[in-house]
Image 1: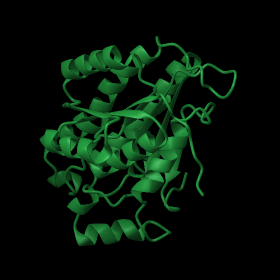
Image 2: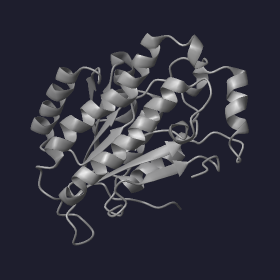
Image 3: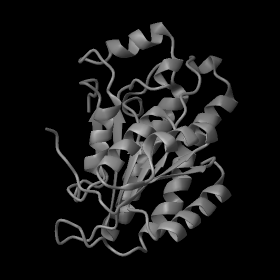
Length: 260
């Protein structure tokens, strides 16, 4: 039997919540007792996710690259819920799989806009308010804990990868954002971490060619992609009060690919 976490009464916010990884993370949070709000630009997929996941899920169609819309969404969720205990910055796009000299500047910009700038906007809007909310009375130790932020980065953000300059750069930036915000909120009782998974079996992975897939698998010593449930289990620990001193930490889920 795996580890279990009690997130009863917690309010969790998951961006990119309509996709496979977002839904998997949301399902794990729900199973642990949390209520979950999903943000995603795909309204139809959000509706499907809400039907699939049940009554403790609310949804909001949202373009996280729109600063005004993100700010309003944060205002609304704190008014409706009173607080946000867990923020999962999961939204992301892959972009072109080409060498840099063949890439389109507008595509590079779009990937950074969603994967990095969007995560910045959401973190800015939510963490600024999270700092002001009361500490949780259910904390397992004497230390003040107001919330947890988990950013879904990528092993490519550490290593880089040929023909993935935009995606790798955006995820490297997300790692730096994680460490910076962790330092800014360390005394506020907000734990900020990131996960750097290898590729998972999601819609994004299905966008790549068979040759590219074989290349990626060949870099993973375990010889397989990470499962969505494996990512979700890591997120649960990083979202729980058991994770109380790891702020700024970057956690690999790479099947042995990581070299540092």
